[in-house]
Image (tube, rainbow, N blue to C red; front, side, top):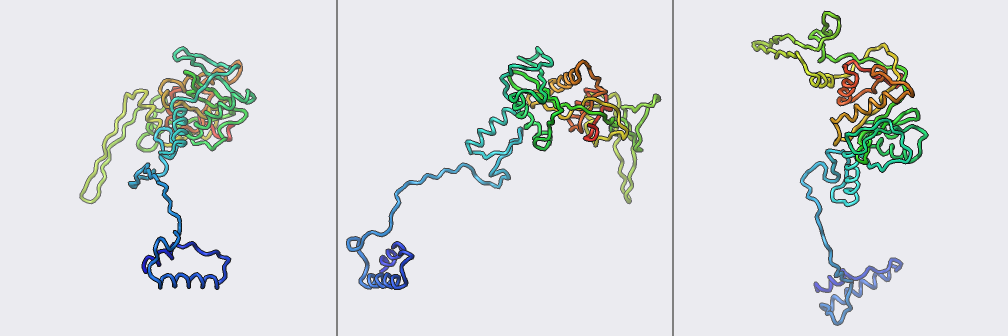
Length: 333
């Protein structure tokens, strides 16, 4: 009896075009077979099909509550990819190599060489402007995509027709890039509080009237009921150049309201991580200063930076040999 019910369960479903009478007939046949006792394999044809195909199961990852279970974010290049997916991992390896070591560069037939260096193999700085061959501009776009991602620019908004692009070539790779544009004015940065601001909120001045680099904050006792708290004394004197640069990096950038004339604006600058701290950015800035205007060499005081990152502040201070470098805004262009 039990076997008949199981066999009836696995019988193929009748055609939906059959009428209700046909359904009643099929149900009657099943009940009649069930009353005659259990069915045998010889008296009843096999019903249903048995799949004998082997299935293989492979577990690629263990989900243990990790936040990047589906997509993994590279801590170096920042790209998100699916770990275990061959296509995604291949794309990540290619992007990571270009980001960390530089984009491959086989060279152009007509290169506009601004300067050369003997410190690296084939080291040179090239200039690319609007109107250059499409192959030149396509290669520049590859670099700009990485720059926009790291510096926070909207896609396609880093470059315009008046921009001049300087690329640093080393070992058949582009390891640095500077985008410069013509400007009309800029604003001088007010030195931050850590480079001469007294405890009362005013800038400390020497006998000559210039801000000093020494900082001495007086102690103050804070009384809360029966408890007394004493602030630590912060004394900074005889600062090295590196310490001053580190101090200029912190805090908000404040500029003077009154503008000063400027001619060249450094819109964005970037160096691959593997080549930083090797004066690549400084060489790009010097090349732009000497070649931005044909026949004229600009002074650092005639060049300005777009609002910089913390690392960009140190570079700007080093380039101008002062914390009072120039910054320009969109309405200064």
